[in-house]
Length: 243
Image (cartoon, rainbow, N blue to C red):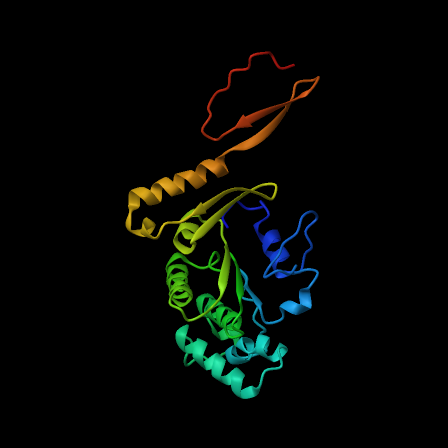
């Protein structure tokens, strides 16, 4: 899901996570509503946020085990799962490190491991790489996509971002969101997109065109007139004068 800041992307994620209830309509995951059936989703939905939200008094291993502890899994299962995902995420050798001893990218890797170890059916990422420098974000994004697309996990991912290129790179389908909380387009991303710069640009322009347009209300003194505006429009001709 891609859209500008403040358009409601994180709100939708929190509704799917079950911590917020939709004001109208319903959100259904696997035939159930996350808010109404919150406890039935234990171990089925995991989330990774922009902030790593690691506990400073826990080691990297202990932070990654947190979800498994909440699920009352055995110590041997926790150890096995964390070792598996630490290996795949490049964290081997950092098991006993505290969060303050890790770089931002390594901390986020621990956050990803904490999500993956419970083997969730749905994984929610809320601009998980947006706060990292470009090189680190690119490496971590590529590693994440390799894991998801390489058959190492069964999860379906809802990836929240404001970066159009990231959305087209990561998504099989892109939902375009615009304020106030409206989905204005759904785009199925072809597998050939990454190998075709011209096609990539066409899809990028399609998303940009959706995000550029907005509705402006202009008070004429007697009534409100609904006028469609765009950042591409440099002049407007009115058929009647505005007071």
